[in-house]
Length: 132
Image (tube, rainbow, N blue to C red; front, side):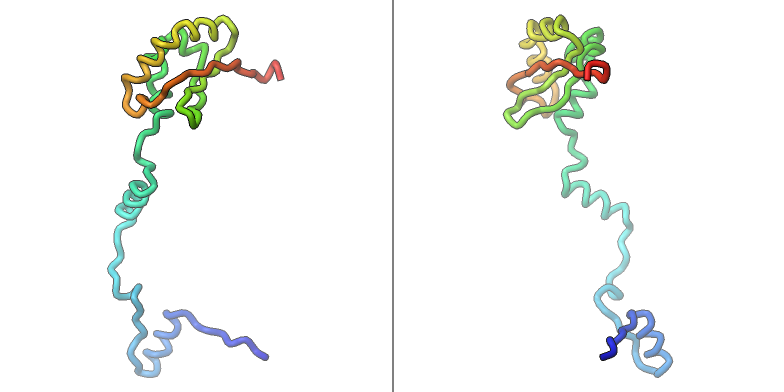
């Protein structure tokens, strides 16, 4: 049994024009093309990709949250499902100092949009490539 081959709409319309028949017009031929820029912005809005996340806000404002000197020695990593911010620090002394300033850091975080829901901070040791 030989498989039946079908032609695309463009070829079928070419054959129809050769035969003197009207071209086949489907729904896609009746619609006017939309500029892709509008479609992309609509898609980004649907996916909430334009919305700034709490993680982005924290990373952008990290030096003002913990201070310039401390920002060089620690970094925010992620926000857990229970609204806990995880911060990696490079040594135990920095972790202790951050622990002392925990309430001040939480107050600073709550000043920024999308960060009011953060209720706790967890401090973890940063594992460098040299210690692994």
